[in-house]
Image (cartoon, rainbow, N blue to C red; front, side, top):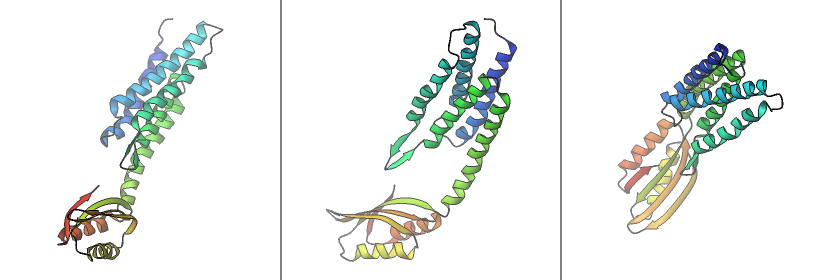
Length: 215
């Protein structure tokens, strides 16, 4: 089965597409960056190309069998990129990007250049465009988790609650526990990043606050 220039072109196109999409991931220091996306896209293209070429030489073979397993294999890679940290799920966008890059590689491997180029452009536009949109949204709506150690003054808890109300941020959860030297408050807040920064400064300046952590 001699290699053809069209096969090389398909693999090169998959490599370029993986690099273009991986650039955004690398730029934002995500787990799956340049090399990972290139390898996924190139590998998917090669498997798809092999499926087609093997199917051409063996009439009884199923052309879609190898290509169909790409989805399963990429699913394991995507699952490895998803982690749960402090009650939040991280890595969903990276996992979805891995899944999409594999489909782009399959498109180029099948010789569907137009489809592969269009999806590459759309994916890159979504990753870059929505990153700016998320930054803009976070300036107005950011979630923050505070762990505050307070002294044993009985009115200090109410004073902290008043500071939160004055800052005009929403308290989603509030848990207070008794400690040896006073109280420990764990609060989950939602509001503009600027307001949360101001609140953090006021809490640190409060004489009843022994320590403050923003998780």
